[in-house]
Image (tube, rainbow, N blue to C red):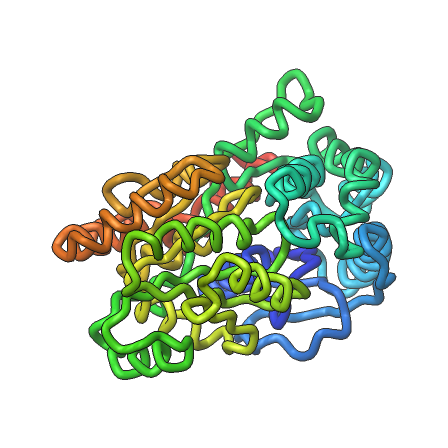
Amino acid sequence: MHVVMLAGEYPPRWGGMATTIFHLTAELAASGHKVTVITRRGTGDAPPIPGVRIIGVRWLKAPMAFTRSFGRHALRALLRLHAEDPVDVVHVHTPLIAWNRRQFQQCHREVAPTVTTLHGSWIGEREGLLMARRRREPAAIANPNDLAILLTAKAYARYEQAALDESTCVAISSFSRQEFVDRYRPPAAWECEVIHWGIDTEMFHPRPERAPEAKALRTTLGVPEGHHLLLAVGRLAARKGYATLIDGFAALRERREDVHLAIVGRGHLKARLLRHAAKRGVAEAVHIESSLPFEALADAYRAADLVVFPSLYEGLGMIPIEAMASGTPVITVDHGPMPETVDGTTGALYPVGDHDAFARVVDEELTDATGLETKGAAGRQKVLDRFTMAREVEAYLGAYARACGDESE
């Protein structure tokens, strides 16, 4: 089978979407399928994968509008590719590519059926930004991309609606699926399977095998000897809830001083967040690392005592799954899709914005060393049971078969 991925993000644009598409393409190719990725040009060379071809196309470097521009150029490249090397199924990853109804119909008519993965919605992104603004996250609308989402999300939602109407849809979480039911207009007979992300469980594994690297990472992240490391990972953006996290960390420091918070992520908010930490009196215990290579991320998970994930909006959330695969318990919000991955056996949940609850939960977890070890092992097992690449690939091959009208596959 020749599968073409239309992906607005692909390495080296590392992020949840880019990561899962990268590993999915690798697993499909390893299973004997031909895979082509059509993505945005100009970000450097992706790590090579045997059997995977990468086609970069032009795109307009403008907030939100890039999704339409990329969509047009991707369709042209897809038509040329199909003329040279026939395509069996087209896998569209929204919302970073925006096709209207006519473009989906042209793809079906002139190329192949489509399967669309709903990684989240523009309306949901907008709600996450509004929540960030209500919670006084710094620069909630200062970033041009965030401002564009606030102003145009409802208009761009029509392209997601086209995917619902014209494609076989897959959601990355039950939360995301329900979001489209509640906020959009699915067809009367709409069926949308939930396929959770799978991750590389060989890259993300518990700490014993690479303890020296993990120890070195604690030094890189500024952790004093004898202190517990709380690790947060993700793009420095308003909806990720980092200012709220720092507020909760300040409450935690009133309970105990042997804790250090490291945030690993790139973005425009680093200086603002560090000023916020200083305002809360915890600047010496907060470190923001924006230059950590992706390959070192697994070591960072293993170096941490707890991974904290305060995000205000996610379609699923890759970070908690990677942390659990690494044997590290996760503390996250009881909001959105988070309860689909984290529970009391693998970490703990707390109410969004409740700083005292965050401090209490983290304090309780760090006090129980045996419990941390037990939860770390349970998290690893949960990932092996529910979030492997093998399960994801099997599920997507079934979705491809249904899109092509072959229920026997």
